[in-house]
Image (cartoon, rainbow, N blue to C red; front, side):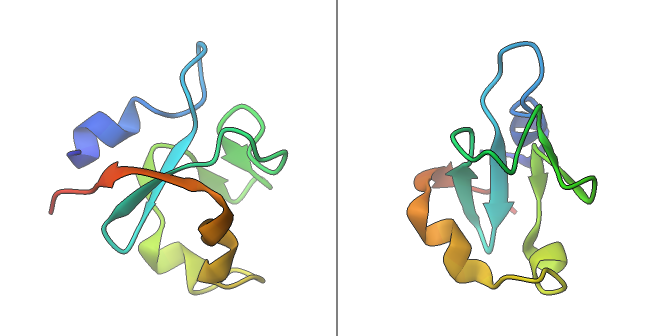
Length: 74
């Protein structure tokens, strides 16, 4: 998946909520923390969050409970 394709999965207009981290794309649609594609007013869906997760109050293991739906092309 390209970054432009990823942008479409922003949780708006019925689209699922996808985020990328270290080259993997995750479907976080079922998370109550991603309402309407927004995460706590800090992050938006449809984006590569690799750099942003480093500053999050949780680590990347949080993503392990979500399905990987693809790889992010560089």
